[in-house]
Image 1 (cartoon, one colour):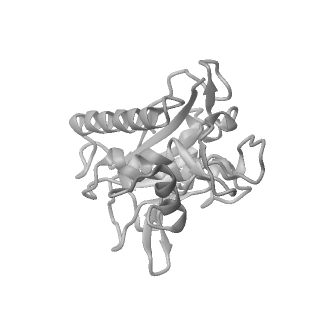
Image 2 (cartoon, rainbow, N blue to C red):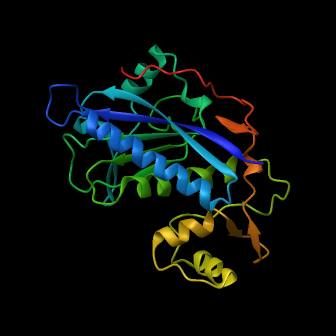
Length: 250
């Protein structure tokens, strides 16, 4: 049985008529890249995880205050109160989705931008932290967008397995960290598969299907442990998300 998850994708770009605005051609390219990311995860999860991306637009340039500083590491575009208010006005509730991604044009950006995933989508807002996670990905970085989407969403899956999974064996987290290709855990996965990971993509392919348990053995990823998590579908039946069309602009 497959698990289908619906992920909210916020396209944050300058308004029409402003330098850096989102063109129809670029929007179509983004849609194609999201399809590639979805197909990649479907194929390498052994056709047990289907990720569907629902796009919405927030047409407002980022200001310097819209970036989160991480010491000497750099800056990442964050989920802001303005975004949250815009979604709320349109009746779009991030809590009903399996994850939230923001693809953005890095206007007024400081030096040292990087891609980032937060455990909770509203970490930068006041109030209680809430699931799901949030990833911010800036455009024009040189790496194919679909690969960045896969990497950051794998982080979100890792967080969900750790915090929300209906895991019958509490000793097993059930998923790998996408940053650990060259760490002991990633190397152990390669050894158990009798393979190697010459590229990050090769590692993502493997970790979508298998993980190394606390017993040091190889286990297939069981996405059914996430059944019922935010925005998850299973067997084609709606769990907590909505399939209605969401408004596309702020």
